[in-house]
Image 1 (tube, rainbow, N blue to C red):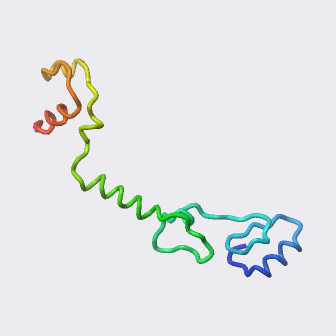
Image 2 (image 1 turned 135 degrees about the vertical axis):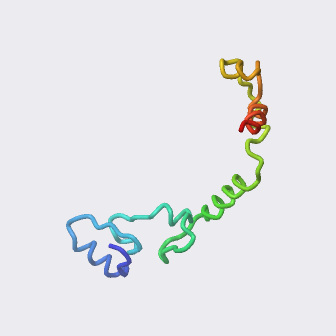
Length: 111
């Protein structure tokens, strides 16, 4: 039952021989449905009035994606300090051992 007034939901649940699941129908149903997107605040345009929102993850995710896409700092030097060792491709480009940052710089110049 969705958005059924609590007294009516209680009456229906007590009168039924099958389990009654509610969404916004009060505490007397046999089970409750909570939509994860609603309680985590993933959809900013609408939150049902019966939902208690425990977080505003939409805002946090949007900010994180904005930082990722607009800071022009990826890949960060501190996460690309591993070495790529000699392979046939690197040997053909003259690299013996190089960092990912160096590869990106080299590839930027490739037409």
